[in-house]
View 1 (cartoon, rainbow, N blue to C red):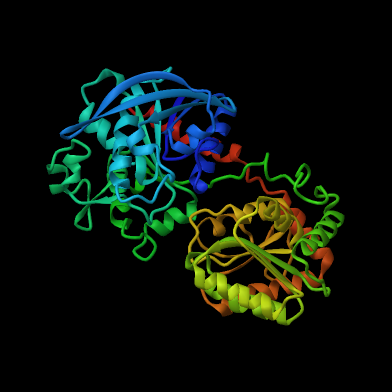
View 2 (view 1 turned 120 degrees about the vertical axis):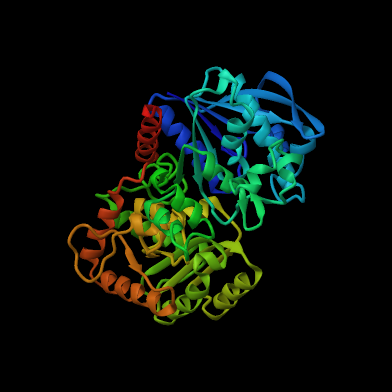
Length: 478
C-alpha cells in the first residue's frame, strides 16, 4: 500500500511537540510492516540549517486567489522513510515554525502546495493521511479543485485529530482569498464553525475516515462537555470516526539499553535497577532519601496537566517524608510555586525548570511513581514510558490514560499496572496516592505490579497495525 502523510512537522527535520514524533514513528512502523510511506512537510529554516541532503523534484506555482507563490519540492530519505519538503522562503525561512500573525496564510499555502505535490511523488498514494488543522483542509481542496483530475482518483483521505483545541479558525473571506474555494461551502455549513471558517471542521466533513489518538478520547469528543464544540459534526461522522492509541518509540525508551541511566535493567533485574537508578536520580537533584517513595513528573506546567491539584498533593507527599522531583516548564506562576515548594523542602524536593533529555530518562527509571493527574489527555505518552521502566503511573482516568492504565485498588490480581482516580480534585488525587503508599509498603506486591507494567505492549508496531487495518477497510469500499 502507498501511504502519504501530510503534516506541519515530522522528525528528524522539524519538531515543536509530540506531533512530529507521532508522524515519524507511525510512518517508521508502517514501513516496518512493508508499506510504502512518504511524508510531506514544510522545508523550514531550521531544516535548511541541518544541511539536509535533498534532491530537487519539481517547481510549480501555487495559486492563492490573486497571487502566485513559487514552490520548490525537494526529496530526502531518513531512516528509510521518503520525505518531500515543500520550500518557499517567504513562508518558511523564518526563525520559528509557528507563532506568526500570518500562520493561517502560511499553512493555507502549505496545504495547497502539498495537494499539488501529491502528483509528484514516486508513486500514486492509495491513502493520504493528514494531521491536525494545518493540513486538514487537503481532502477539501482535492475534492473541490481536483475532482476531474485522474491523478487523484481513488485516493482515500484520513484525518487524525491530535489536538482538538486548535481548529484552524479563519474569517470566511479567506475561503476564497487563500484556498480558491467557493463561498457556498461556508453558506451551506460544510466548513462553517461558530461563525467562522475552520480548516479542522472541513477535514472532518471531507475525509473518508477520522481518527483520534485513543478510544476513550474518541468517546469524549462525541460529548457536549468533552467535544470542544466538535461533538455535533463528529456525531454526524460517528460511523467513520475511530480512536487508535499512539505508541512509544521502543528504540529510545528501553530500560535494557538506555545509555542515559545509571544502570540498565529488565523485568528480572527490576529491583536492583530501580534502587541504583533511584540513587542516581536523587544525586542528580542533590536530594536525601528518608525511606519513602519517590514521585516524579515530566510535564508542561499548565492547567491541562492537572498542576493545580498536583501542587497541594506534592506538599502532602513531602510532609510525610517522600521525595518529589519535577522536570518541566510552562506558566510562570506555576513555575514559581514549585520553586517555592523546593525552598520549603530543599532536602527532598527537586525542581528543574526547562527540559533536559538525560534527566527525563533518569526520572522514568528512578522514580517509584509517575504523576499524571491531567484534566484531559487525548492520549499521553509519559504513562506508557513510565510503565516501560517499571515506574507506576498515577493518572486521572481520562482519554488515553484510561485506555492504558489498569489501576491497583487494594487487591493484586495480576492485571494492575498503575494507580488512578476519576474526580478531578485534590481528594481524588489524594485517594490514588493513598493507594500508591499502601502498595509501596508491600514491596513484593509493588514489584509484581511494576513487572506487569513493564510487560505491556505500547509499541508503535501495534498502533500501526490498527491504522493499516483501517486503511484496508477504506480501500475495500466501493
